Image (tube, rainbow, N blue to C red; front, side, top):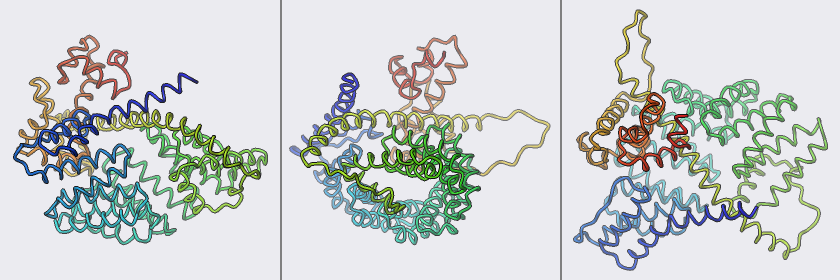
Length: 542
């Protein structure tokens, strides 16, 4: 127990140490606003891989221009560190320094919208998100307008204002229909389905979900397809088409589990349990609710864990009253652990959605204030330690899953570049995937990076130059086509090649594999490889 306790504290202190250098340089800039301290701040962000390209100011740059950039990126950093009040302060200082209403100002407004969602001030969040929409509307860029409107609709949904989100998402659909971006369209249609499901109008929710499903099937994005099918399943549950919903959740569970998205997997388990329960198949529902409850407990997702125990309570009600009572006891225990405002809000949301009086029973005995204070103090210390470790672990697993999906996409694009073997059978009709322009662009980037392995020309500036683009234009173009920063995309190409070489060339020394993948040092290669694959190159090779 002592060992676990110290490990948890070590994880928390590691996170604090990571932020210390950035915040020290920021504090120096606040005291002495000159180019040297501004450059030191951005250098610290580069070392943390928080920005893709260095930002360097000459001594002749006006102080206001430096403060604008420093404050904006300080707000981004503080938001990432979950220091939302500090993020708010820096973003509000940066905002008035953007004089023209351009895309950079829109980004700052969008950040403020996200900050206020985290602070629970949905009115302010919507206000800034709406200003972002107005700037994007002036640009006439339908794709960008659709994206910012989708964000605004999401803010209204987070504030439990689905009715206000409805006209906004309908406008977003109108704009996305003006451009060829099927991936974004699927996201927006999925949001529309969720809005109408929340409004209780599943007759409207279902067609939007079905259209989103059709798009994801054409794009061949299996993990995203599973999410869209889950949204379709929600609509079917709302329409009391329980058997169809059951079939969908049984279909997507293996894909969600294989993708490593255990949160979505656990939610699907809950919904499958609900579809079975609604068909009076209580015994069949129990194992799914149990597995979901176990997963949510490990994730620390109290809100969804309560869903699972509610399902178990209802499933056991007629089959085993003693087990039903045990589930009520678990519910009471979970409710008593709601010490933070965030988890209290989660329970309030649960109560509003289900309103089950039997699940609202209070414990008969009233605890004294002194006892509660002591318990909270002890639990708070343990929770802080555990949460620090849990967040580090969860972030690492999410990164591994995301990079694996990206490497799979890179491999698919490289296969598409190779000439196909002649065949006597007629060629199949090509499936409609992401736009040809995006696909060709990504293929070109992959080709340039592969060529750069031997020459070590893997810098973002070099690649942008070979594409005849500025660094910022290249970054925006890659984010639009792949949803990735240049450094993340380049690293994924390196790791995709490394994985293949280690399996296909078991005789090749690891140092040579590292060199062929663009690494100068085997130690750097091994560190990156283990972070992505979760094992050393030698262990991966088996």
